Image (tube, rainbow, N blue to C red; front, side):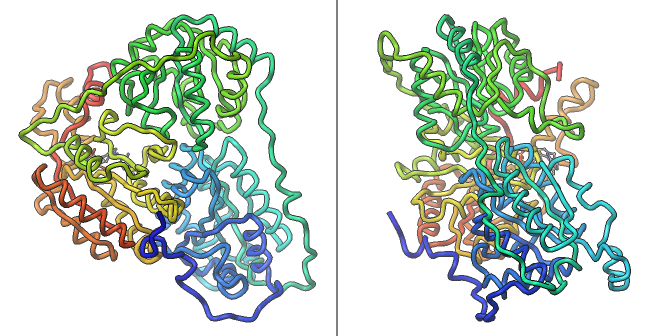
Length: 594
Ligand SMILES: Cc1ncc(C[n+]2csc(CCOP(=O)(O)OP(=O)(O)O)c2C)c(N)n1
Ligand SMILES: [Mg+2]
């Protein structure tokens, strides 16, 4: 249902006075036109003189619309916002960062988006490449021989065009490459001189769509036939549902395929929701860094595994205790692998390879398999309620109370804390959960969630981010951008007042070395003083709630915070949770062999 307070159009904010400019006059006007041709609605940015030419073109030539600027207080947020937007839409938005130093600030977030295979077009800038044109001192600091080298290991493509026409071509290519699967960030570095130079003659119009041809995706027929044959004859097929799209039809097709095969399905919180997690065929709950025992058992017992671009097949098999199953791999991820980053994971053995996107493969497999002899009969299964520890406020209490507070309304979990238990919240729609930060870069949660909420604005879905306190504190100023542009969302902070993940690492080292595990907290706890998270939220223009220290108070506070979001606000609830991870996660993190 639409709600005028919550759904205020972003176009209302930051309106410039009309500049009356209607023809490109400078190099950066041509670059701005190219950006508009990509049909990108927003450009998240932190300003800098190196791109003052482009900045002027966006405001005074394009009138700050398509793309509209979203001012960010840190480049890491600007990139993370583009990342979150892509998680929902599957499409690139833009981010702009200042010459070298701004890009340096943004690098971790770019790496997160790269590992998460999310598209975005990043614009940067350099002081004049022609040394004779540089302003003293500052332009020299902000010029590097090869700025793109900072991010080349985790972008799909980069360029430093030397003219207005070359800039146009580079931006079109950047959009095309970023949005072509496997998706990823691209980087275009605009020379200050090229941006600020007056055009000597008008730039000829081009049909920009012709420069971004749609790349057709198809599953090779022989491989589909071979995979269908293996799956048809399998007695214990298991689907590892990994990086798939947010498309609802594709979601239904995955369910149809699992039911057609009677296959168990395993999912994981590293990536967005891929299958209804309380479906009788879903094995256990979604895992975090390792499969839960039911999923591990299914994998060990499998005779055929169908990986739908699963992240880290070998690692999962190792964690599950191995398998003798034949492996059908659906992925085009190899097209992206390079020599810098190992995020491609260990090389899995493959018996049948389908080099196409999972959605395409699932449709083709369904067709090849034909209808089932007997339709799948959904067995009765009443999910077991979570067992809650009555004494202490845990992340499970938080989850149960939050679920109760949101009730039946469509909710998107835009981010989850490391302490989250996959069993606490079932997913029924591809937008119910958007996946992790991708690259394990703590501090991604706030910006990604603001970007996701931006994309969800007006959809009627409630965006909810559950962040660890460490994650939240690293990037809290992303909230200001959400407050300024009236992008409502709810943050719930699973505040264990610690970089707790690393307490478990110190515990393991101490145990192996026979040293006191009681010291695991030193250099990890974020207390004395406790940080006032609600006040930090308030300082960004958000509404702060808490700290909540008793499970009994959660319901009331969540209801108030959700009402604030419905009124168009950003709301933050600080929940003081007992340090601790789910049993499966703790078991993996503290076992001796790791
Ligand atoms: C940028 C960055 N710095 C440090 C780390 C190492 N690290 C991994 S998890 C973690 C703790 C995160 O704390 P929090 O978000 O509060 O989650 P918790 O483990 O306490 O549930 C840290 C510091 C990292 N992954 N990324
Ligand atoms: Mg913490």
